[in-house]
Picture (cartoon, rainbow, N blue to C red):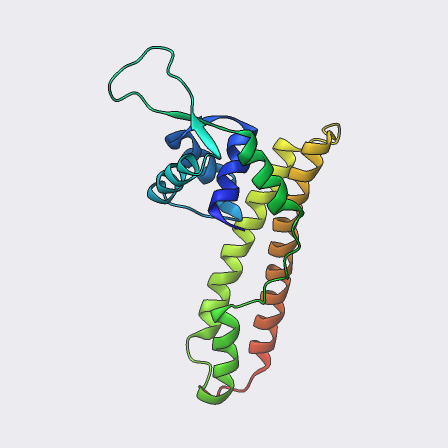
Length: 181
């Protein structure tokens, strides 16, 4: 995924200013694609220069007024092209897993506490996702766009469920290891 496509998606959902986009990223998109305020503004400038978005005309011209943006037909076409294009799955790269592998040759000092910290972090994230699901996706909300958004959330729930289960298993394994730090 790329930031330009995340921005095009967000603007197609709702034309917004850079500040509003930043807030929307912080509220939902950040769960699977993060971006800073500066990155978003820089990308808005590029997308506008490429003719994929435009600044909406201000209702009343005023100095310092925030600009709002909307997607142009070329931007919608680019997002549709990108959405339809095949992409290879990404290989998992996780420093914690590499550290566990390294522990087999240098010892496990510090890792058990870090596994517990990771487990608590994933439990908190899982609880947050489940609350979002409860709040935003009641059973009667089944329009196609809602079902697709819910599918994205379910990916987060399933990943956090995996991590909480795997970390609990890893901690159980640690409990059975001989003290060889």
